[in-house]
Length: 474
Image 1: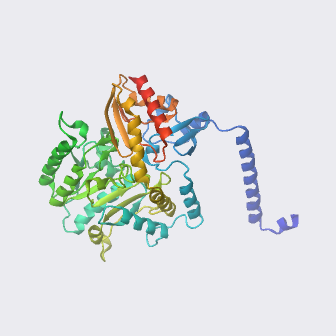
Image 2: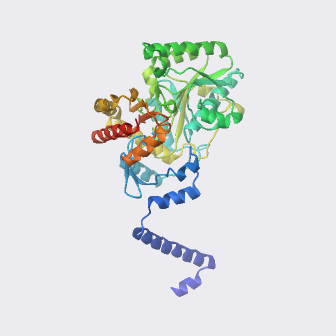
Image 3: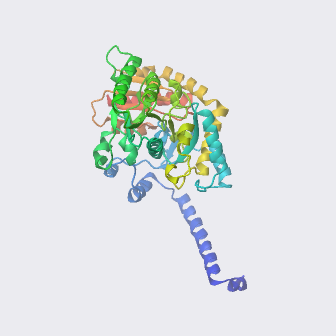
């Protein structure tokens, strides 16, 4: 062996020695971790020293500690100290079929042995082709080609750019403005923020963005006494028409979250608004962008929320649940008419947008596995049964005197809580963790958006523990 080592070039011998040292250190490290397992406090300390967490005031973590998660299984998350939490918000609305789902895991392992990534400019691969074909079959009729991004905000950016560029290619370059609903949320990149109506973001980044106009939301909580949700939605649509009539020559598109405005406190509205919006956008030659990033993939009871208004948008935005909560991926689907407006010899007429990981094969394979589960398990029908069950067992929670505006669309539930505490959301989140629930209220709005695999026993636990928490805060 010594003679063999002596015959190796110095660099090969050094590499071999370094590799041996690496494995020796790893074995000793793994042994140390078995004797001294990681703890929540250790992970919190390390995270605060190295990670800048999203949507956070980092100083608040001095008194409101992070929750380090060691693993997940099904609807549950487990920390390093042995506590478990029912993931009632699907980890920011992305997880559909549970953490560490064996079928999605298997698909990813198989794909890892074939192709982890290749750029999509000038190349293609089977997972992205198959996913595009299957989405075309599932989406509202008339939507064809898929353009890929990496997250919800990038899907919004793509749709806004594609809409304005379409009008430019069509000889109407002045159509560069957009409208959205009041209290809308479409992402936090600069273009997405321009159609997002959240005061916190607008105040912080207003000088950097070209803020677009908003029209009144059909959120039925704002209806007048005695006015139905449908009547209120139609009244709001009249306001939309007034705006389109006045500004349609400058408007490229109207962007909307169909059926439920998530960040507005799960604001729900009647599907007649979608139907009227489609009719009005057609009448005034304005694109309709359906942001189904949060509400698509079965979340509102149909595969896509647009189906409930029986409409086809000009652009359909998909993200979050498309990969089952595994990997970042977003998709913008559009019509053949829009696609062909970019099909030309001149590069300037092509759609000029790209991401390094556009159409990543692993993410596409996770998405295909997610679609397989939908098909094989008849998920939409199962969800209808589960929604009915949760509505049935939640009557005692709904009857609490300080619970207001109980509402449900598909696998989304929400209600407001009258509480004397100005910091209700923080208190509710903390109490939720103490009771083994991951709840993430928005202001005084509590919502459930659980993974679709939640069991009846887990739904009972969710309702009863939430009732206890609300009772402690009112």
